[in-house]
Amino acid sequence: MKRNVTLMLVLGVALSMTACQRLSSSRNYAAPLPATPTTPVGQTDLQPLDPLAQPADGQLADATATDPAAAGTQVAAAAPSGARSISRSDMAGGWKLASGADNCMAFMALTAWSGGYRANTRGCNSAELGSISAWDVSDKQVVLKNASGGTVATLYASSDVQFSGQTASGAPVSLSR
Image (tube, rainbow, N blue to C red; front, side, top):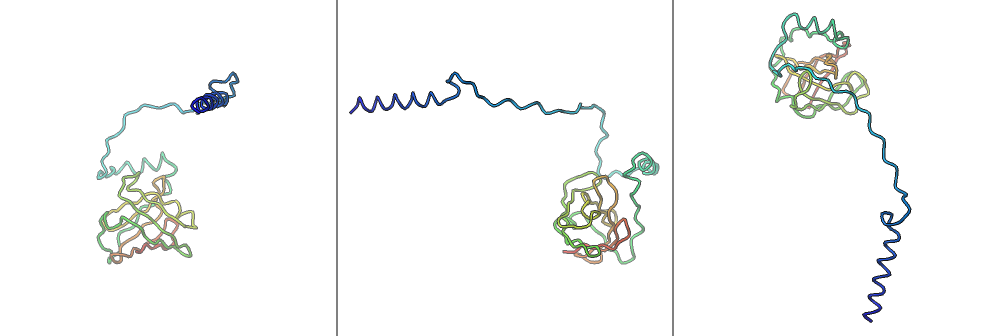
């Protein structure tokens, strides 16, 4: 009986070794994948990050002259008389976003992002509203921005849970909880 168990064990090991590619004479390995092309890495000095710093008067004009994406950025008008003060923490979380026939969701985080803080939208049919990727609060207004830093919409608080304003194209827009 012991001899039969030993014989079966030896046959099992021999059979498994013949099926193993590493020990067989046939080298049918898969070809290695080609290297992924990379772009060269540049090296420059970065300006220090100061999220509270305001651009100098001449900087905004220079930025729109050199950056075609910034040329479409509109400067918001003064806040309406009934506008309430807004803090950044008031804006964090999910919001219902509506403009014309378009109703979708906007999500605003307190994660620093170019031009303010990170934002995204879901379910927007409008390419304009779907392009929102950042937001910021300036005095009594909320500015929604696209990835290029251009203003998509400017809104003012009419209550703790309702913001109204207009898009850069002039359409009325609202945020509500």
